Amino acid sequence: MNFTVRLNFHGDLSLFLKRRPTAAIVERALSERSSVKDVIESCGVPHPEVDLILINGQPVDFSCVLECGTDLDVYPVERHGVTPFKEHRLQVRDIKKFVADGHLGKLVRDLRLLGLDVVYDPAAEDRQLLDRAKIGNRALFTRDRRLLMHAVVRHGYYLRSQHPLEQTIEVLRRFNLFSTLAPFTRCLRCNAPLEAVEKAEIINELKPLTRIYYEQFRRCSACGQIYWPGSHFEKLEARIAEITQRL
Image (cartoon, rainbow, N blue to C red; front, side):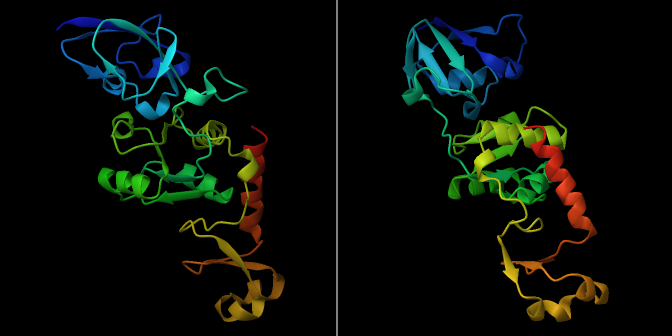
């Protein structure tokens, strides 16, 4: 059994192709029955980046088995407006929980600052990241395309930029998170929610000048870290403004 599959990658999916053709069309010679997922990923494109697959104009999912020569159109996630074949889109739109690999610490700080739930351990190995994504039903952020190709990864995103601010904007747009932003509600250190706390409850943990000049405090519900609107607060507000001005 020998046959050829022709894949047309739309949008920015061409950035993943092993060879960057002028037109994002790849031909794969197959000698056995193969799933659509395997054929697409053999071209270098991680399945979490694919939102719609058409064979001869008809939508299919990743499990579809190819047995003869055919043409595939492969589309990325659409970020704006109503899209064709909406009911056949492969990526979920309402993900609100995430896990990030160890190279994305600055992105994680930005997202937690905005109130988003992002699990992060700079020392985590690949298997730990995959387990956390699977068990917590979290979308995985990474710049390692091979990591996104693991079968256990249901949701994920490959960061295009290496700049933290640009990465933050990418994530907010990709997962349409604008309506869920809640700045200063999550611990920057451990990711747990912050809770308002009376000054009298924590006064013995405050430095002398902080006791004098500040009245409003929040405490992490997990690690106990205390937050108040000091000079650092102004820097965080400036960062939030820098992000929201780009949206």
